[in-house]
Length: 325
Image (cartoon, rainbow, N blue to C red; front, side, top):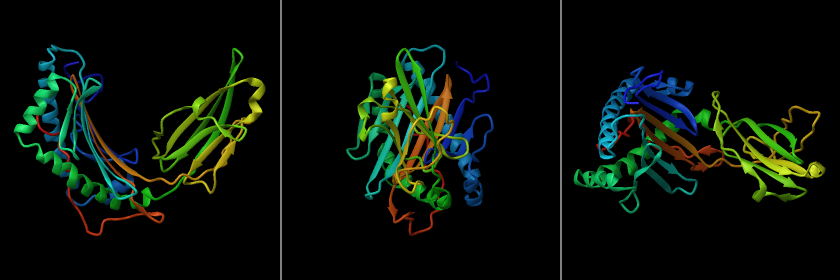
């Protein structure tokens, strides 16, 4: 698809904090906008105007990059996507992990390792981009990831501190379905925050890691998360299986059994200490549509709270789409 259509914007940028969208820009609306109450209330004057200008510039670069890569891969048309992930993790031990990756049509294209200052390229087309970036002074990328990313992370943590520190325990629902002599037991956890959770199946007192299938931790529209774990068992052994759930919002670990007559089991049980706050921003442009993500994650805590920055920072989003490909 060489032009946007069917209600799909040509370019989309979405910011995530701990997996929850907190701001968004797309080419149809043409403005950066808050996605959470705390971001709407906490942004400094002029913030959204500055973000809008940054994203408009990013949009132009991303569209140019998609056209460049279509030429390198000898593609005359069709649907094509350019994805970007840029971010940093501030871990609980104080260390920082930084990420810069590009993908094209769902496959790795080029990534940059800040620690070694080296690139990882997927093919000859990506090697051309690598050479161009080096010739233009890719040290700017190192600064972008080394300093600006962490500054932005600290700013958003200050803005959303109250929301970030809340703890909402999961509602847990255990269900079962027998088919062809196999009983499939499913354990679903709904509505929890923060997003880190432990879900597993026990047979007797033994964890069954090798036999358990897990779903991802997926954000809900209300700012909470849901996830699940599933296991197959013999119908006659049903009573030996229990779902084990752990979350920071629970006073202690929880054990849940399938009760065929019951629809919901919602007593919380298990404590997993969340070690991170994540911020991600996503940008998409398809055909002439690209997709870029910048992400920040903070897991540094003191006691039950975040270790906040000691100075005030009112900087803007310093994560441009990057050099042209």
